[in-house]
Amino acid sequence: MPEQSLNGLLCRLVEELVTQGVPLQQAKREFERRYLLAALQQHEGNLTRSAEALGVHRNTLRNKMSSLGIKAS
Image: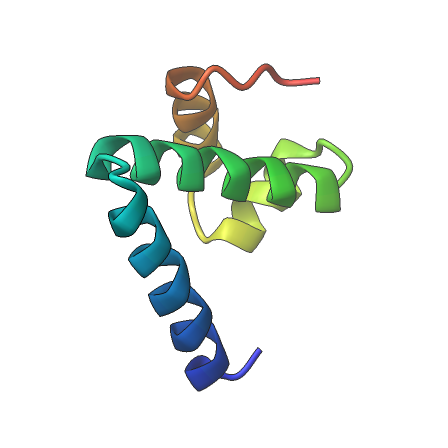
């Protein structure tokens, strides 16, 4: 996805969240949760491949999953 397109999507999403009064912490948590779930789904639950795709260490992914209430399958 081109950077301009991504920026446009994010700008529209952020505007909508601010308009709806969604607190920053809630928006950040939900974004991270859905982002990790999408990566895990794309890599069929494989933590090592998901972590590599996300650019984080496997342990970092596990810790983030735990803090967001995502269970390893």
